[in-house]
Image (cartoon, rainbow, N blue to C red; front, side, top):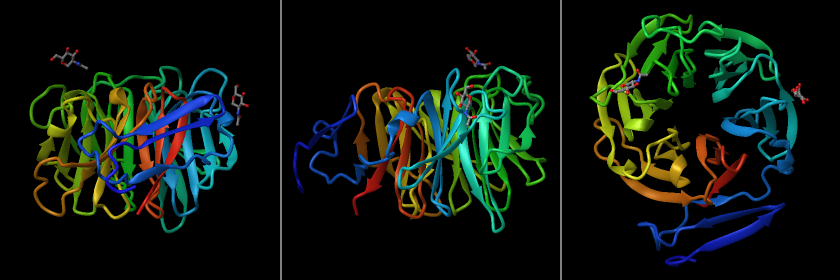
Length: 327
Ligand SMILES: *[C@@H]1O[C@H](CO)[C@@H](O)[C@H](O)[C@H]1NC(C)=O
Ligand SMILES: *[C@@H]1O[C@H](CO)[C@@H](O)[C@H](O)[C@H]1NC(C)=O
């Protein structure tokens, strides 16, 4: 209902009560932009661990989920309709970030692994069925900041169709940096050190690239998003005004590049931010928000660039939920 001051939706799904509301937000009275798809997935019992990350292959209609835990499959694959398809375990320890790359000829799944065992501290590429194709980093060894391809808890990866790779390293290890690699895994540039200054990071947690040549990084513990030139690595600007309550955990654009979807884990919120057109990034403007239930803890998200659906990996609720755009 347009202009409604209170919208409360509570629904019972198995034993879990999911609540979405917007009555005390600055956007009250505004229309909701997203609606929870209560039929996704068809059978939630496949989530048996802590669901840290999700990636959508919109070309093939697949959704990959990375989960952690003892005696659980580490990667679950669903159809976009919510049917469970298959899972794999092979060489994945503690998935943190996940990304699907589609090229003209094939598709693959990249996973950042923050495990401390013999496969950890790596960024790995898999075939859609889970065959290990490429390992970056030195498995089992946390890396010194002096060697770019030696990671320490790599947080997330974004790969362009050209094969150029952006890695945020890391999720609390000794490195706080953003690294660009060529498609043959050579360093193109590296930026960032531990700190609060311009271009420095405290837990660079998520990374994405827009069509205007800008790299967006969720600088989580500095409670800001920083933006860099993708060709040179030069710092272009930063946003912090939207994050006084909680730092950004994810950065993902919507399919039309009009908005950024930013998960804020500690306040259980998805912030919808206006994405600036080409040029200066200006100031942060929050245009809408999706308030999740307490203790849901949204960690990372991904957007289906075709349908616009937003998938949210929730560590607290131990599930992935799908939100569909209402317009
Ligand atoms: C992965 O390993 C767990 C525990 O060892 C097992 O229960 C599960 O069936 C395995 N899944 C796959 C797809 O191999
Ligand atoms: C980063 O710097 C802060 C203080 O400036 C320090 O407490 C912290 O341990 C440093 N982190 C790393 C990974 O070096």
